[in-house]
Image (cartoon, rainbow, N blue to C red; front, top):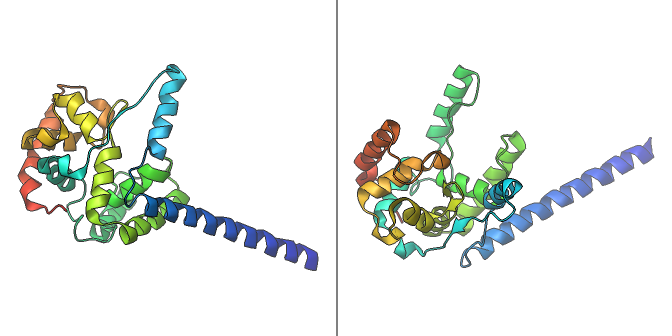
Amino acid sequence: MKTVRRWCGYTMLLALGALVLVQLWFAAQVWYWIDHNPQGTAFMRARLAALREDDPRARLTHRWVAYRRISVHLKRAVVAAEDAKFMSHRGFDWDEIQKAFARNVREGEIVRGASTITQQLAKNLFLSGERTWWRKAQEAVITVMLEALMRKRRILEIYLNVIEWGDSIFGVEAAARHHFGESAARLDPEQAARLAAMVPSPRRYLPGSYTPYLARRTATILARMNAVRVP
């Protein structure tokens, strides 16, 4: 019996040690990306793998662009659409979390999320798309790391450069050229709001798409853009 307890103790210590090492690896990556640009993300790798199941030669369209070369209209539009309190919270919008929890309980399923830009970045950089409590817990830990080690400007810069904006289209520079034939620096307010409106379902929209929903969402974001602060 003592031997069993001893081995259980060793197993728990090994598991705890492995968990600590994983967290240290995440923290080291976040620290490195303070002044180095990510070459890819977990989400980008997963998407490329899925594309290559149908076409082994498939590639992603992605080009990094510095924060100063991204239209301020796009920065405002994305913050207004995805995380209006981005500049004031520390990674979590607790008011939105409470509202989402109450609605999901009422509906009996997950119908509303409350992820901030920092949480979305944590997921994109490191994690799978599965919805499990373990993954959400890991996302929360990485979110704390991002907020502790990076400035808001850097968090938003990386986010805008790695999120999906179309089928195999990643980052704002590729998105601006794909949808409007413009650089990210030259996006006007309406173009910026339309791109921001596409973020939740980016593969739904081809260049020139302008559905009634997209028109309404674009108008809403345009009306909110000047009320938000950006780094």
